[in-house]
Image 1: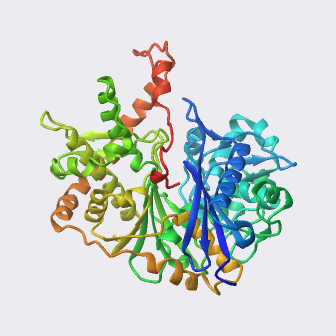
Image 2: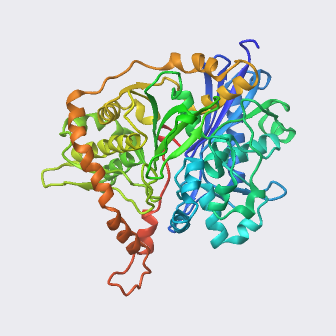
Image 3: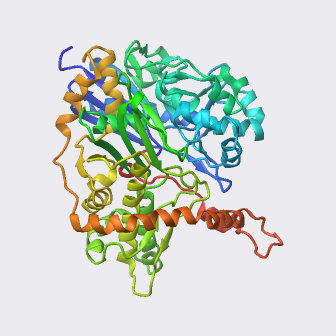
Amino acid sequence: MSGEYLIIGVDAGTSVIKAVAFDLTGRQLDSAAVLNRYETTPDGAATQSLSQTWSDCVAALKALGEKVPRLSTRVAAIAVTGQGDGTWLIDRANEPVTDAWLWLDARAAPTVRRLASGPLEQQRFEATGTGLNTCQQGAQIAHMVQTAPEIVEGADCVLHCKDWLYLRLTGERATDPSEASFTFGDFRSRDYDSTVLEALGLTGYRNLLPPIVDGTKTTHPLCEDAAMQTGLPAGTPVCLGYVDMVMTGLGAGVYTGEAGVAASTVGSTGVHMRAMPQDRIVLNDEGTGYVIVLPCDGIATQVQTNMAATLNIDWVLRLATDVLGEYGQEVPLKDLIGKIDGWMAQSRPGTLLYNPYISDAGERGPFIDANARAGFIGLSIGHRYPDLVRAVIEGIGMAARDCYATMGDMPDEIRLTGGAARSNSLRQILSACTGARVRVSEREEAGAAGAAMMAAVAIGAYDTMEDCIADWVTPLLGAAEAPDDVLSSIYERLFPEYKSARQKLGGVWQGLSEHRMAPPNDKSGHDGIRPDVAALTTGVGPKSEEQKSD
């Protein structure tokens, strides 16, 4: 194919839906983005309209067409990835049954506790390589069966976010090997597994699962309806990418052939992964994390994900904006981001501990606790705001170390992407906490690039994914930044205390959760949480494209 041709990568994330144009050698030409929208309620629900998501995807593709000259005549393929986990139900006519339950939705927590003590839970974990948590489609459907069976009874197929967009683009129901295997299957076979379905109590719902399609080998043509809406030519090959976590990892350099390499995406959430032959993966004793296969023969990633990474920074900066706002000074959050390095210089390393579990959904990596919440330990009268900022950023670094420690030895090198990769302070602390070199990928849109790389292989622009990686990934890796020895020694001493704190706080988090859930006139000695306060404490979601990860 000539250099005129290009591939469009669509990445439907939690905060934005992006459409990105790449030439066949991996050079990014332009991009367009549409803000995502979802609703949260005090009961832990986080839902998103399927119809609106498709409309936003169309808007992103049309906006890209306005930026890239002759896009419709140059496009060789379209690839789609998106936010992982969650539950997107459709009926027989391929119409939405209800709004999607997102990975942020925490309503399935009671069902997760019930299933986690089931007789087949260990077998489920050994097959999927994935700890059971409230984010996952399996847990969410099992919870729907128990609490809202009419929703499931009205469904004819269950999809993930990217699968829904693939259906609208092609008219084909499908999912990919990554989400299929870590949700309902075995990562070794990359197929569904009957024992996993039995462990989830969903044997009778096997008919809801769509066919599994590997986008590097099989594509479907853009259907007439989608072509009319997007302005792209009908018949264009459409590639179903893997889940966005590993697409981002692939685009950022998690798999380039060297030993001791890992990749971290530090955005709203934190995603930490290492790639290896899937027959060498050793599962942890805690029963947590994910094993997510790559679109490379026999290669999978071990993954641990923090529910909140830079969301913690958002929170601590908003403390400042709230106080300043009380005195009539409206300061945009982005202006305060530029102050972080100065505040770091005014504070001493390691004087506070901060557990960064700010998400209303609790934590899922490297431990699972829907009640987990953030907190400072060690505050004294001498601490000031810069100390809080430093502690929050150190907490993000400690959480990354906690994740990597659960997967084995610390990596020698971490390839870093996400909005936080631009922060010198965060890179320095992440490197010191893990003892690893840090390299930042210059790839602007790693998730969309990972999906587009699959399409490049599918249409024959490259013979293998390894060949594609050599052009699309390796040349964009920046220089390695070595860890600071002094900081490393401080965090090496501090990490056991960080881990001990989160291990011992479970009972406190449970008690606080019971307090929050108590009815307003509960007779146990408190009044519960007022509705106006509850409204303020529900999740509001990621706030910017720079902070997006999931």
